Figure: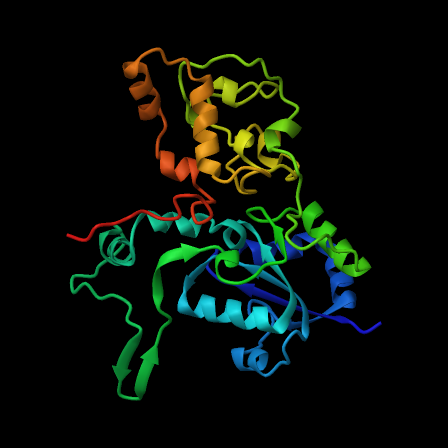
Length: 320
């Protein structure tokens, strides 16, 4: 049987998803036997024009990691979609918008102001910002357009499968490899993870008791056998898809939500806010105000990974 053709791309993300494919250790040799890498800028020196020259649908499977936040990301997403038979949203940023989509609470001008002026490590008295075109003696230098809104991959192109996680875990990467190798991929639209919420898979003791204070993880040492949420630590388990192997919870740290919402949940942040409100023992407005004050950065906590895919999608910003 002819070897498959594999592409991998890194858009708006930290790079951990590219590294995660190496976490399968020696099994990477099986991947090399199964498929030829025809595009992977992080590892192999292919150029965009090489992909443009390929026939449509000549790539068997593309693992696309990272959100779409620039014109370059959008162009390559659409190019790889045209060239690939199967497109996989690989990791939380491609699947949900991820950490980069938190900038949807701001616009491009505000993001540039913070990144190039306000950040304490900057020395930019002339307020120089990136430009899409800059003329120099040798000609014009071009940068991609930086969009106001960060999008998930499926908001730009059609996606067959989603492999969630920040980054995806080795067992799920192996599950995808096995499915590709055997030719037994699930129906299009499938998420390669659990069909349950992480909370439903967690083995910690749950007593359904109320809480009167919310703690940040560094403020207490939680009991490793009891539900973290019932100890006052915001654990995203009730609003997060399972299948990660409880990696964070197993080391006594709360779930951050990187697998996105479980089946049937449209908005991960709203689901988690409801879960917290249901167990907080607040009897009046004063206690509700106290609860809200204890949740540091609620937007970044509840929408850490899935703002782009939420009902909010982005902030509405009125220019002065």
